[in-house]
Image (cartoon, rainbow, N blue to C red; front, side, top):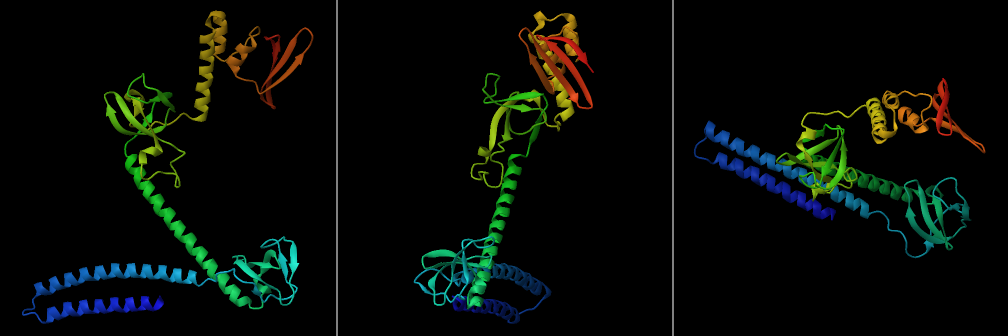
Length: 361
């Protein structure tokens, strides 16, 4: 194979020399040599030079690949008939390729066996007298030949890893380019929560609820409705992105144009979100229990206050769930201690039979 490659290189170089000679010969034999003819000839030679450079690059790439394949073919194929392994007597055959390991067998002079495989950590897997185990390559009498095989295997392994890395990088670049094409027109949700629907109508099925500040990608419009894509984060990654059917990597739906913006909308901060959730909890409780609450109760809950005589439910609506609860149950009553705050700044509320009777701060 190497000889065939060498002959191909010689043939290619010969063709190049012939092309250049023919080109120069045509110039020298021409009837008239002018600045214009020289410029044209120079331009053509530069074009030929570019083609030759590209061709040489392709040839060099192929040669490297062939040399790599030749190198990999020269790695010893293991297995076959039992033979003298030429291992130093009293060498340990271990159950693992490394330490700690247990000695399964100690070699004797003239032991016959099979080399099953070699490992990059300098161990050789063997089978001796029906026992499979691992022997360090330095225990072989002809350890240099084993070392050469280990080094070749390392080179092949490194080459494979490098090729895999390049493939991953090329795939990632391709995915990034595809994503850039799909996501060329981003929009942001500006309402607290927006329904992504299956069709451009309020009667369309809700596919997903999108939060304020989430980014989607516009692909079409129909009246006051926008056809949108949102990333399916289970698929938008290097390994699971479907290149052949890009839209399968997204969730598609419709949203009313009034709740999306082409300007960046930032999501609420954690502090702001907590504040809004707290206010919503209080409003929802007051709305749901409006008929049973006094005006004072409503005002206290909406303002985040507590008052003796409140029910436990009112207290939790106003202050939220306690950080801790201590409960005492007797024959006639249930007492609870609701604890709010940290150790250094705690407030204790005392609930008796579901009613706030006292507190300590």
